[in-house]
Image (cartoon, rainbow, N blue to C red; front, top):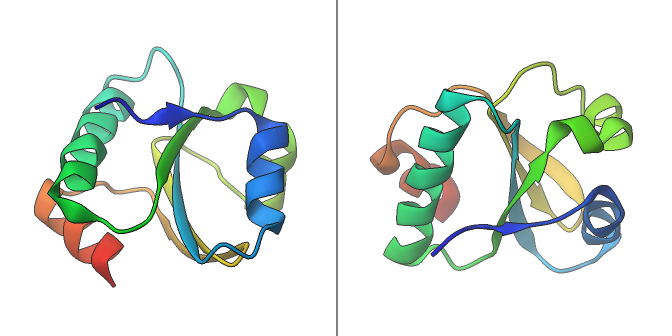
Length: 103
């Protein structure tokens, strides 16, 4: 199942909500590595991560890109109650992502 795409206003709202954990994959449309990371996250989500995983186009999220100091894609941000608790630029494997997101 494809990851739900959110725009910057939706992500800002998500980052201000007290909802527990959520993950956001920052990508660009022409990035091959981003497409692989997205597919690995789709598999991870189906495998049983208990919180939502979203994606967004970094080109349309300048405020969050600056606030979270995202300098390259793909970039996976994990939030807990609106605070960044993990930022990953190296998306190693499905197993790695599963362990990271099950913590």
